[in-house]
Image 1 (cartoon, rainbow, N blue to C red):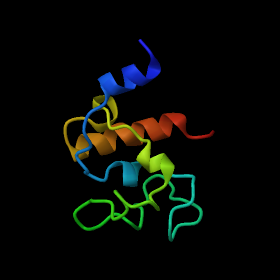
Image 2: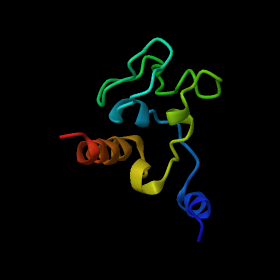
Image 3: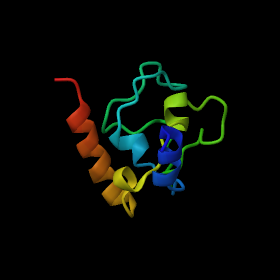
Length: 95
């Protein structure tokens, strides 16, 4: 199975919970955050409903647009997503 097919099979629809905007580090520039956002620091574009204000905007960074929501990173709810993504971030952080 090709990588794109595997991604498509394993992905899910984004529930727009904002977990990836908090738990994961974003190293690329974001409008208003020229150095990105470290893990655990909410992106400034995350609103009080945990929705990204840039979600369908052309200024949304490619790293955000290309992050595929998947059950093994997003879990079944926001709390589980925060736990899973925080653990992933910790495992992949530079030592």
